[in-house]
Length: 475
Image: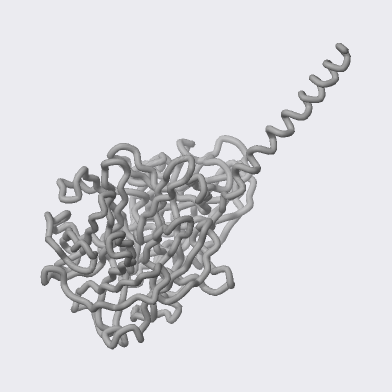
């Protein structure tokens, strides 16, 4: 009898660990990995066109509304509707609006379409920025509604809220069901707030101005607990710039002072919207940004980043991939390896005393290294301390308020700080503000060799070589 019990105990000792090892696989079955900054396709392998839009959850289904830019024009083609249950695989469902939806849309611009649901009227309500096809002088909002999340939407027309200009905008439905319009007004210098009517189709009341004279646009808002977080971009057209955020306990203010979020180009994005995944294990916010390509708008890319909200602080860190689980609410950025460079010894060809090389790998996107003069090429490098396997290099390049400049550069590596190899030649780079390069190299030293900077709107390269932040990932 004793031997039988011993055999049973030994058998259980073998089986239980095996069962335990299987649990994480089942728990992570719904985790999806999404690549940032790449051309996205829908489930039918067609170009995914949903720029500057919004995501609305209805039951277990997510609907993504956005601008169709496949025709590479700023003028209106359609507002698209896609659906997904896992946030990675999207199915084209319909056009919410087209040029045939109203004579007013035959030659127009419809930008930043946002959709919310009104429980009292059982209507899905769409607001957007409206202009005619010839310019940006009308500065109106457009409103449409539908009894279905996939439309068709009935177009109700365009107008200026309270007779005031409205360009970049968003709408927000609070937890009490009241909805609001955030409107970039007065040539984008002031950000105004309006309370919507109970049917969400009009303006009920103009409230306190949120930002006055700050020149902010592309508003995106999220609420966590009793605190509101508002992210906006600067007004620099299609070019990226430093996003800023502020917080408030009441939408009507007061709002805290603007603080930077992300790097000075917001990782080469402009805020599109923020949405929250609510799952069985909690909720997490995701920042969705548009990476505009002004020369081919249909090839503009999407960037999803975990938005970390902690008290009155908000933060963004870039990852080439993001993992999401619509069932549990799990959200995490994924990099190719661990961060190897932060805080390691850094040197540069030259450096101003107040802006040493070490400021470019200190983990702070708002500090940087600056050379002593306008000399090209110019190099900055980091000593990883030992030979490492290098997989990814992220660089936050110098930009000032969306300045139209990009760096031509090479990533060089060495194991002895004497003999150098070009691990990646990016002298053909035309990307503004931020780059993330995948490569394969084995080295102790990583050098950013800045060959030149291209300022297309300035005949002389007046840029002093400088870097905000360099991150080297690997194993």
